[in-house]
Image 1 (cartoon, one colour):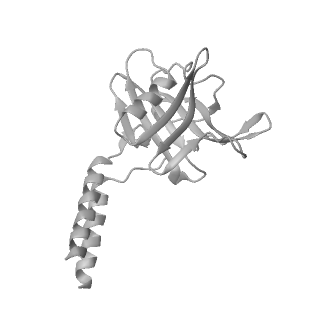
Image 2 (spheres, one colour):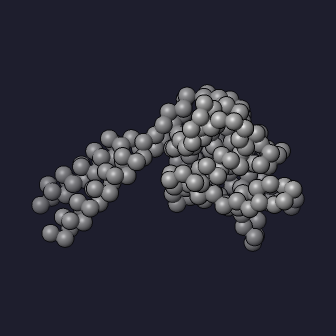
Image 3 (cartoon, rainbow, N blue to C red):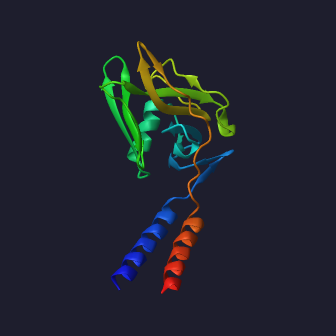
Length: 195
């Protein structure tokens, strides 16, 4: 009986998660989330590793003049599971200390090997970023326009230079709610059949 209740609770949790994890189409890409409202949309990509399954894209809808810092703060404030730690420096603006989503993170380290989030920009609209450029300005100075793409990846300091790969553009698709529900029901059916 306890096993049955545990399985039922697990299946219910999976179904609720499935309903909340609906991917949003943006041109050729699936976004893991879309926050804000407005007539302009910019996208931010977090590349948490060297494999395509650890890259996620999030949309930010807005009106008026917004910056890369505004985008990150909106993602942090929305209930989508993104956590962004920023520090403000007078005269410089915001510095990204860490970004996390689910169990993945990009962060600064103060011990060897020294690491830091690397900021990338691209302007390609719904077709996605065709080429990433290492940003020469910070997130507070980056003015967004409709269709801009920003990205972050983990970088390692080598001497006075930071070495990092740009996001690859192969973003992980968020599972469709129906697929997750069917998976949970299939698991329950298999367990019931074993009896």
